Length: 407
Figure 1 (spheres, rainbow, N blue to C red):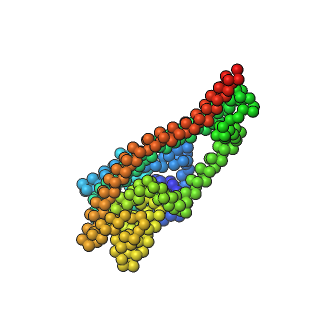
Figure 2: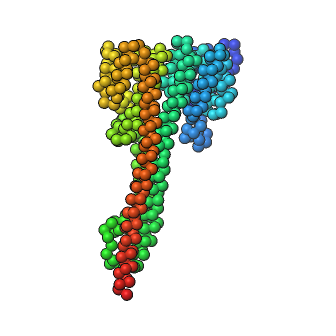
Figure 3: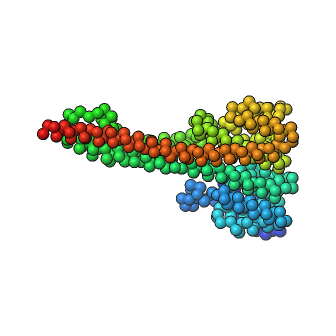
């Protein structure tokens, strides 16, 4: 929740600002820790459609990468943290991000650790980001950690962009096909059906697939509003369900059963696991804490659960490579490379190489998939057009021929 507040500091000076907090009491506690005495606290109301639907409360990955790189450079140069944040706030183009940085600057000036200040904005800074910043502060290597974070965000964004690009073409074509199909069924087929009846009469014998198409067209026309409402309800219910933990788990389990998609999902998850875990280990985060944070960054609940089970065995004294060697989804090469890293004490270095390898694999697979999808979609579209043509043009030709023979 977003609050605006007015408070006084130790010198009695009035300070105004905005902050996110779970509730009013939590904000009062945070302000008190910063040696501020709350005077007025108000829950900010959302104005406009963009705010209502979260359009203004979104920070692009590009903005986050630029912020992270610039903050790293300024920290490395010895610029005080609060001054660095204040400078970056003035340079931010995104209005919401500017507000977030402003609030973080005030928190840091009040004595709050940077990682803790980032933690107040989980929609902007991921759990991985926050934990790595905390580890960097604890180890005195914040500038190096920020550089790694910027690189990691860029790599993750690159993979997402490639996967989205590969899926965009079939989604657009499929959407156009569905809209065109319903348009033909509702507006074109009824007119063609009338022509058939005019040519052959009410007792004209039409092929079964033509009769099915005409019946489907009549049904759609008669129940267009009901079908549209039902479709909207079904989509809404499905979206709500897959946003729940159980629904999300079942969706991710389904993705791991679809042949080609399964390979992409696994490779993306392994690349994220390797790079995130390596970064956390380099930052000095403990193995168990690193595993817990890494699981949430993998993007698939089924594989995340496997990693959690592996973490339990690590807690009982086993090396991580042992439980992962028995995993259904972690490829054998991951456990083998991990075993080498555990023996040599260079887990982070080896896992970075694993991440590079799988990111290249994803790029190759996505590029190959794109070249396969295009001809496949052409075949699908051709089949639909052919079915409609066979259902319509064939009977019309036969009826016209019969009329000609009768004359």
